[in-house]
Amino acid sequence: MQMHLQLDGRGPLHAQLTRALKTAVFAGRVHQGARLPATRLLARELGVSRNTVLAAYEQLRAEGFVDGRVGSGSYVTPPLQVVRPAADAEPVLEPQSEFARRGRRYHDHLRIPGMRIPGVRHAFQYGVPLTNPALTSAWARELAHAAAYTAPNYPKTQGLPALREAVCDYLGRRRGVQAVPDDVVIVDGTQQAVALTARVLLDPGDEVLLEEPHYAAMRETLQIHGARVRTLAVDDNGLCCEALPERAPKLICVTPSHQFPSGAVLSLPRRLALLDYARQHRSWILEDDYDGEFRYDARPLAALRSLDEHGRVIYVGTFSKVMFPSLRLGYLVVPAGLRGDYVNAKWQDDFGSAGIEQAALARFIVDGGFERHLARTSKTLKERRAALLAALRAHGDRLEVADSHAGMHLVVWLKNRSAAEGEAFIARARSLGLGLYPIAPYYLDPPDRAGLLLGYGGLSVAEINEAMKLFEICLQEG
Ligand SMILES: Cc1ncc(COP(=O)(O)O)c(C=O)c1O
Image (cartoon, rainbow, N blue to C red; front, top):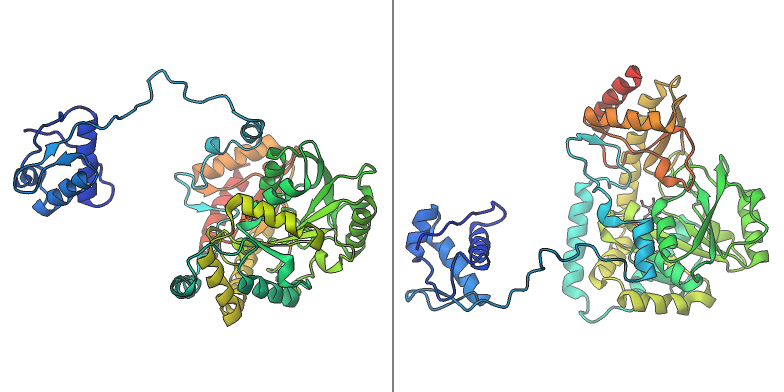
């Protein structure tokens, strides 16, 4: 039998051949009961080894596509009832719930382009982690150890006690937060912490106050859960707490240690004013302490939670910045009265975060590997930041840099350019192979100015210097 098999070039040859044969069966090019070509013959025809064909036939046999034994021929079995969507089936349904409707409205994920932009050599993409071979090998060792020694049953919903203890120790030393393991809930990153907070604290229609600008994923998540979002401006001292609204929101979300994205630090008087406001109005405060650890010119600031005497602050930390985002681990420090509700919500979500990763992380922190990694990463980030700042400051006449002394990103404004001109600037940069990103998505109501959010965590000093040459070309043109 002559077969027209198209190998797709993806993965091992035997897997390609298995796929091609299945496609032929599905397409009706090989009929039920037909004998597949002898392995030797097909191998010769395709220019592959006989073992490759044998492996593919074996796989088809295991999956029930063919019958028969090696040597006596392989026959295509009666086709499985393959249900194909009718050509005229409606490709996208109406949203089936209000939740789904809000999802499409506020963050239609499948329509959002991926992080990688084709043709871009250097991208100042925020959120790209710093790649670090020392961390990779240390983490591989911890994971292997944890895989061997972690109990395979469901982990505790609230989080592994060893990790909660390690987190408390770390928070006490580095962030001034006094907490006991019972106060801590381990979560799958800030993103889950926000979703749990929305479910535990908010009913659809409840008001949430966000900083302007703010972390867009947090806003979208709250909106998808039905929150009504208002914003309050940020200046050089963080959220303008003097202007907190008379009608208090149920929840106030802040980034006091390193305002995202502006970089401001919430001043002490404002911290106290915010806590007092929350106490008086019985509002909750969600403190997102995503990268307060990385401060370059001074000691890291204590978290807002360390001043909270009335139990109004829900503190969120993440390992996405201090380790890497694919880890998907973070933690909440929750006032005692809310703890049960948070643990219930976490149980409903996923029963608990992945046990092996939690165990590996706990051991990494306790062993001191985490501290060593933090010290190395801070040094590297500081060098990258210095390189970027030096290049940006050389163009002080055209750029305004909002320097923040912390984190893995900077905000830069292109002087005397509108938001639309900023978009044109970004498009020009892209045509030169440079990825730049506008600040506008981080506002509910974006200003008509050209602003950029430059993430530098994922670029080496050499790459930053290369990238800034392209940036300068764009600047000089406009
Ligand atoms: C302000 C802010 N909070 C939190 C996070 C981290 O989110 P997660 O822990 O879900 O990775 C980020 C990541 O980019 C961020 O920018």
